[in-house]
Image: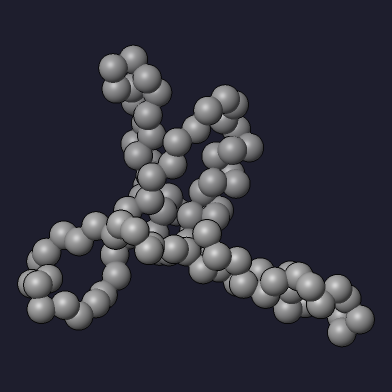
Length: 95
């Protein structure tokens, strides 16, 4: 997938830092593939970029999302269902 990966330990704990490329689709690949080979607890932190307009956020500012931050993803399987399929399945998932 072209991930750039650095693996080592920090204070005796195994740690990998992985540059995944772009967006949540690549994050989905990463989590699925890493979970297939890692047993036990796993913590994942995603850093990303986005754009926005706010007078208080000058160019080069670091802005951290807090309350009200959500992720909306599309359930692609919902759009592939036949018209007779269960219509109660949400087309979008909010977390």
